[in-house]
Length: 481
Image (cartoon, rainbow, N blue to C red):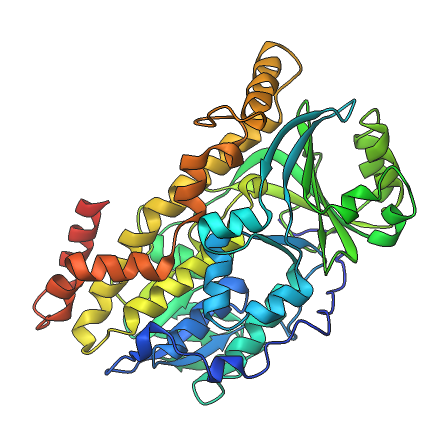
């Protein structure tokens, strides 16, 4: 359905959000590059598409990025960069840039919707970085996108970006992409990184994949931190940066600092009242304030500073049966195959992990017969993990939005117990559950590939002579899931 909502202009990246030519000096995969190089078409220039393009270019392949938009840019919104993501970015050479423009939160704190009383807390900061091998950051989406863009486009001998290149259809057997202009872009492999409204997804699954409404929508807003610093009651939210959430009946709010604490980002989840599935649709700041009338007085102060807002309808999609087309020459990545609801803040992380896994796997390519099995190896490594994170996100929607009553009282009590040092296993504050946190944030995409290759990949794929068909690999992958 077409939207009549006005679109918010794209936001410029911070001047400090520059990667320069760092990608030309970093070494990935121990210096290993594919001995059989491919021409890969990446459809979509979002975070996942750029991550895949960068990783695959570093693996020795030639990349053409096909992007629908006439210009590169992003909306005004924050993104959470958890350790499973930041370790990759640092490995790719972005550590210094992240330190300049991102914010390392001291922890995550939950508050009661009416009073602002503290319900739960989990410490992050430097201890979190030490425990999980990489820091937790908050960053502006435009800055993050610019860093990945710089990182990728600097590989100019291997990466070509084409704007205004809308892919209207694909030939999965050739493979080739047909653009709206009628031009046909031939390649060896197509990666569908074209987001939640993916054209490539429908070609892969062979049917329409309609989203399911969650019943929620989200306002997004950014406030100059100076407004909070000028108020003695609010200044500590900037001076002691952390993620602060208010939980209430059918609604919740998450907030944190970005851009070296110069800006304060807010995401406000509420029952959907007719919004659209778009990152750029504008909402009404006055309507937003009325939706949260009666909440914590400190929160009311913060909302009074919001000049404008984006409004985004939250739609859900169940995990797909497969991410690989039967031809063995088309694969999906990121939101195109596993769109994430925002309740666990892992959408960007999962997409970039996807790109990293593809790059590592395809750095080992030595013969065309390995392409299809490597794609199914990617699916085997990634689909179960992303499906589990999707489920974890849906669980938070339920936990955060409990109506006031016995279940809510039990949730609050359990959150407080974890805050005071009691065992956090299966705690409603999933960030206080050390087992879940280690599984999610201790993950290293490159290590996962290296271990899989040592255990199975070298034997199953490394010595291929080309006798296994695409269908055979699909059946083997299905048996492993």
